[in-house]
Image (cartoon, rainbow, N blue to C red):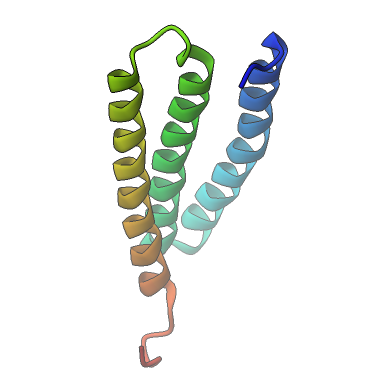
Length: 102
């Protein structure tokens, strides 16, 4: 699939315009309430953002790289996403009420 050259730039910029304020809000909540659960969410957002930016980079360079490299990169992005989701769930469990049952 071919895309216009500036689409990748807009995609990367749009992603950062959304994710950086979200990370700032989570960081603010973590500092204000001093709960480690927000730290787990922040780690999740950082790892997710790295994976998303790698994916955007893959969209940008896929025509110039080998299919083996592309496949390995997609696998690495998937593993990074899995790890980020583990941190997300850990954050959810750490912010729940202590008396709540799972």
